[in-house]
Structures are given as C-alpha cells and as structure tokens.
Length: 408
Image 1: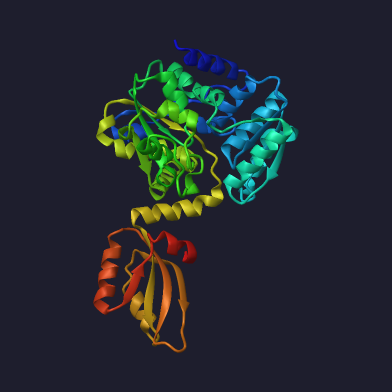
Image 2: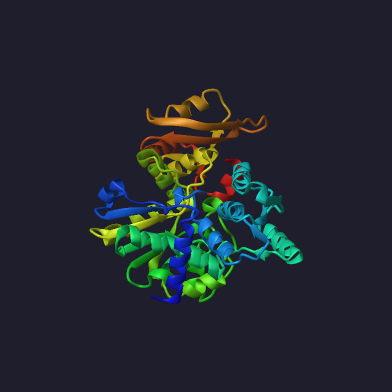
C-alpha cells in the first residue's frame, strides 16, 4: 500500500467519529436501462449533501494548532468548511459573493453556527477569492482551498476507500464529475489503474479537458455557472499533476440543457434530488452506452444541494434540449385577423407559453416574441412548414444564447 493510500484510509477511519459512510446503492432503473450493474455512490446523502466536508475534515484534522480557517466559496465547499469548523471548535471566516442565493447563505450559517462568520464580498467569485486571500494573509489564518490542497485531495479519496469496502471489489468502471479536480485526483491516486474511468465535465466549464489539450492548467475565457459544483475556470495545479496522464479519451463534456433531462428523470422516476454537478455522472451513462453493458459501474453523485426555485428553469432547459419548447420572433402583419391566421396553424398538442406583441403605429408589421410548448418535437416541423407556405417571416431564437439572455 502506498503512503497516499494509507493516509486516505487513516482519514476515512477518523471520519467515522463525525459521520457514517455514504451509501453505495445499486440502482435498478439505471441497471435495467443500460443492461449493467449500476451503483450510485450517494455523496448527496452526506451531512452537508455533498462530498466537500471530507476534504475540509482532513485538512483541519491535520492542523490542530490552527486557530482560524478562511475559505471562499458560493456553495458546497463553504458548507463543508462551516460544518467542520463547528465540529472542531475552530473559527472560520467564509467569503461568499454578494450574488450568492440566500438559501446557500442560510445553510452555511446553519452548519457553522457561532463558529463562523460569513462575509459577502464581490459580485463575481474572482473578486471574492481575492478578498478572502488578502484577509487570510493579514489575519494569519489558514486558507482552505476547495480542491488544490494535498490534504483536501487525500480527504476526498475517502470516497474511494468507502466504495471499495462497500462493493467488496474494484468496479469495472467509475464515472465521476470533475470541477477543480480534488475528488477525481484523490480517487485516481487511491485506486490506481485497476479500473476504467470516465471524468465528466459540464460543457461550459471543461477545465480538465482544456488543461489536457494544453498540457498544463489554463484559465477558461468564459464559465457557464449552471453546474456550479463542477464549473471551474481553471483546474488546480496539484490536482492536474495527478490527472495529467488520463488522456482525452477518458473525458466527457455534457451540455447543460441535456443535464437538465437527467435531473428531472432522477427526481421524477427515482425520487433522488441531485444538483446539476451531482447529476453529471448519471447523465454520462448515455454516452457510454454499449461499452458498459454487463459491467459493474459506479457513478459518484457528488451533491444534492438543489434549490427548488430553480426547478422551472431546469424544466424549461430540458424541454428545449428535447425539442419540446421553442422561442421565436414572428413578424405579424398589422391587420385584423392576422393573429387568428397564425393561431389556426397550431395543432392540438401545441400550447402558447409566452406571447408579447409590440404594435407599431407607423408600420405595417409588428414583432411578436412567442414561446410554444408541444408534446412531440416533430410538431414544430409541421408548424414551420405551414408558416413558410403562408409567407410568414420568423426567426427561431431558441439556441441563440446571447439573444435569449435579453428577451427570454
């Protein structure tokens, strides 16, 4: 056993004084769907509903003399640090962006109690991080990175330790999300090359793929924060040092809209609440397809901190991905009966979900922003064919991200 493996086992044993192992559960629905033995390592069932408290625990355990811990986070890392500050009786100062949803602020405060102070600083995370690091240096505290820290990596490896003990063997295939790389680096370092891996990232934050292509960590020009638990602008230096040999063939990127279909499926069919990053490993199964048939596969569901106020957005994004909802701008003649002519083109399965009409007094035409839901994606082909035949002018803006941000 390597030194790292022994340290990971020691960290895992020490965690048992704080929380029990998260379940490893065979999922019959997914197993039947993919003709394989699919297990879910349910990190969404940890005390803070993510794996982040593992790394925080190990880092604090190894620094018993540190009096102050500082971190910057808008979510799961903040909650893990808060939980462990309270457990160890340490003082924590947690910096969060001003734009952090109130639900996440409240949960962090609940886990940390009187042991922590929350400071809301900066509209964007980079500003928050700079403020946290400056404060930490001035106050002489220990800055606790969410991933780029050897003790944190070692702590996250406890997921692998538990998984092998629970399964009784190495699985054939492990599917896990990658953000900054702490979990994936820890699990790979503990398990080695005895099984196959698929490392999954959201398309709007694929920092591991960018680093593999460049041969070093690089900063992404833009990050889509929808899957905020895994959407990281640059993978860690320490984590990439452990991941740089995995090869692009073992990575996958998932479009955020498609990810929403899996979030809804797991909620509606299985009653499992997953945050976007936590659903990445399950969503990736459809890309693996026949390659996992008959094999034992473990998907790490890394978190379940989902704000249900986001559910309408998740539903809409899923509908858009499946082709069941579209938005378009229609040029409508300004004459009596023109709207009725358009409505006659709609079928029995079509429903208007959005309608905004701006009448122009000095023009012959007005613009309509219209959103339509349907039960069958093929219905849109029929609708557009009828509009074309009738001479209507329209523009489908469903996939125009820039325009959609302003008008939808």
